[in-house]
Image 1 (cartoon, rainbow, N blue to C red):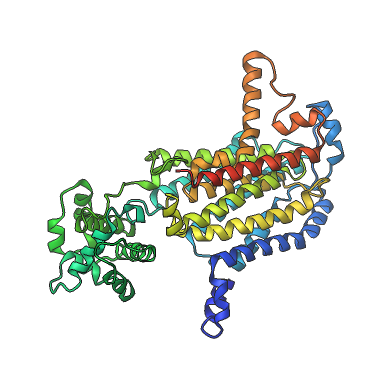
Image 2: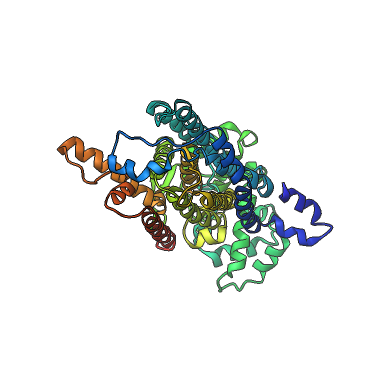
Length: 494
C-alpha cells in the first residue's frame, strides 16, 4: 500500500522514491512485523487465557519429560495467529501486493496456517493433545504442496531457456562487432531489427567499444537487460526470418500455433530461438525446461531434470518442512528462533537471485520476480522475532501447529521459489537433524527393538540427559546459524 503511495508522491517530492526500493521496504517490513507483533501480543495472550486455550501436557508418555514440562500446562497456545496476522499486516503496508511470487508464498503460509489452526482448535476443544488425524493433517499438507507444484509447473517462475544470462554470450567482442557492422544497414536485416530496438544509450556504448577489446561490465549488463526485453516483443521476427530458421520440434510447435497466438512464455521461448539463430556463434543454445530442473549446489550449471515429477518433488518439500518445524516445536523459543535463522538465509538468497548481475556472477538461476520475496522474508523475520519476545523461556505463549506448519511451509516455499531447492537441507540443517532423529529412532526400534536416543526428537534426548531447556535452545540456535552460514558459502562454491 505504501509502495503505491510513494509512487504517487515521488513526482512531487523525490525523497519518497526511496520507499519504492525493495531493500528499503524489506527493512521497513521487518520492523513493522516486529512492532505489530509486540503490540498485539499481550492482547492475543490475554484473550487466549480468557478462552482457556492452553497447552495440555501428556502424562502417559515419558514420566521424566512430564516432570520437566508439567509447569507449562495451561500456557496459551495457538500463538501462530500472531505470526500470520503480523506478517499479513506488514506485507499489506510494504509489499507491492500484486507480485506473483509474493502471492504464492503468502498463500502457502495461510493454507498451512489454516490446517494448523484447525488441528489446534480440535485439540483445545477436546482438551487433549490429539487434534486432526494424521491422515487429515497430511492431506492438508499434500493439497498445499500439490497446488504449489501445479502452479509452478504450468506457470513457471524462471526465465530458463527463454531469457539470456551473461554466461550465455559466447563472444562479447564478436557480438558487439556484429551490432556495429549492421548499425547503419539500410535494409531490415535480422541484426538491424534487434539493433533498432536497443536504447540510444546502449547503442552509443556499443559503438564506442574498441573492435578488438572486451565489452565493459556495465555495457554487458545493459545489453542483457535489453535483449531480454526484446525477447518479449511479438513483432521481433518476420516471414523472411522465420523461413530461414532451422527446423526443430520447438519451431514446428510454435509455428503450428501461430506467433500471434503464442502465450507469453511460448513467445519468449520462440524469440530466444530467433536470437540464437540471428547471433549464431555469439549466443549459446539455451537449455529447455529449466523450471522443472533442480540445481545442484556446488556445481556450475549442473541440474537434475525432473519433468512432471517436479510437482511431486515440491509436494515432498512442503510436507517435509512443515512436519520438520512442527516436530522441532517442543522447547521455548526453539522452533521460532531456528525458523528466523533459516528465513534470514533464504531472504538473502532471494535478493541475490532477483538480480541479473549477482545471479549471473554466482551462476545461480535468475528469478526476476523474487525481489518481493525479500520483503516477504524480512516481514517473516521481524514477526518471528516479535513472537520470540513472548515465546522465550519461560514462554508466555506457544505457536501451536498454527505457527509451526505455517513457518515450515513458508521456508519450503522460499526454497522452491528461489530455485534453490537442494540447498534447503543445509539452510534448514537443524530441522533436518530433528526429523532424522525421529526417523532413526523409529527405524531402530522397529528393526532391533532398541532406541538410539533416550527420546526423539533430538532436543528431548538432551533434555532427558540433564541439559537445561535454555542451554539446548541456544546451542541449537548456534548450530542453525552455522548451517545457514554454510549454505550462503555454497553460493560462491561453483
